[in-house]
Length: 317
Length: 317
Image (cartoon, rainbow over all chains, first blue to last red; front, side, top):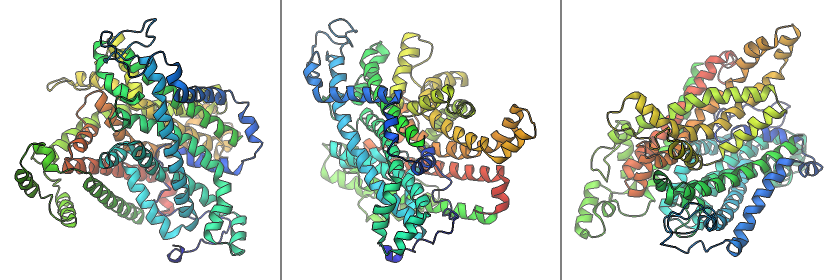
């Protein structure tokens, strides 16, 4: 594909002008990370990882995530009831010593559903984020490295996708393809691709100006080798930060799609779907059916963001 | 300035055209027959075919795209499959409702987030900064229906001070409408706060570290005067862009908030149209979101150019 693209310009010490309006002036979802990540990339040292293990926020975040991972894997073993058992004589019961989190409209134990409801979201979100990160990295590296016409065209398409709310694009595709675990992973992964591409592109643009890139090009290395062998390792920290932050947003997206009815099918316990099934009950005062799954989602995303924040801080210090 | 404007307009038209392609073809890949969806599973096959012919869905794809685009250029969004009347009145009413909700969210979040971001920057690296930054980032990843549920439980169910639905009836007074929109606006505020505050913080820090701020301090200006006249004026420019680009997100968030609070806005319209396979309604709604986003970005760019003499005098880029 490089045949039709203009080769990168020789670095002359000044940053090239951004292709007009392609991605330069607009920043969308978490716009500031691109800039931060670039700053991060240049100051990365392996010793930084030891600092991470001294950060309190990292431990809090990791502890909460670990707790939910344990629930996802072993939850069915220690949940007080089966998440599917309906006690039709004991529906909408308020929290008590028998049912700490109460029961839902079908008499199912809310605590057990919250514990086991972590499984699907913890399988889907990492896979979707990994897919989006791989595709976004490839696209972003190519846009940043080749620049020119390719960057302009890809930039326009990215921009058009960014004009639409993520949730709307995702549910259009899910309505089209039918909800399934694989569809959710692929759709959320694809929706994240342009966002990650934008960050990687910004980081790659900076690296392209460095002497080591022109040196390896003078050695005759192919564009693919320069991108993957030279630029990629240097933008890796930026990608890592982007990955952890995106993981938080993947949970946001998957939970939202579940809430809208495009996620995991009933009766499988799922926080978003359980809130969707029970929020009408709020009007009757059955707050426990929705509040506890809501707090579970909140704790998981906040934990992921705490981890992302401590990684970013360590890399920046 | 004129070339800059023309270039921006050109790119805007290009983005909108790509968007119309995405919207149209995404709508076409939705499975299911619109006539079958309208008439139900027991309708005779001949009736289904007749309605398909009447709706024009059995024409070739390109013909349909051209007639759709041609209609759009004349301000005609087509006829709803489900309601058999023009799409525009529905889209217009929904857009007005959504703008009310979005405007309220913006009015609350913009001053709050700028204040938070500037405060964080002034105390960069210290406790206040950590609290504002991490809280902002964490809140921005908590899905709207999660914070919405918590708000409903606290203010609607326990304290009973605010209505838990957004719709205030046909002849409601402005104040009554406003009261109904407070709770739905807060989840949007919580998500947006993090983005805007992050950008305001980054801009303020950059401006605080600049030579002109150092000069202003060295010539003995009081600290507050330096901040107000030199720092803030420069630091808030990038924030304007972020605020504009969040309109795209805002409408995605509206899908969830409007569902949770039962409000007849654009998000709700798109959601229902997707489920009912009402393509013209869906395409009209999604395209309007794109137009709003592109317009907001354009206005932000123009405002930025107006406020920043360096861009104005320096020409396009």
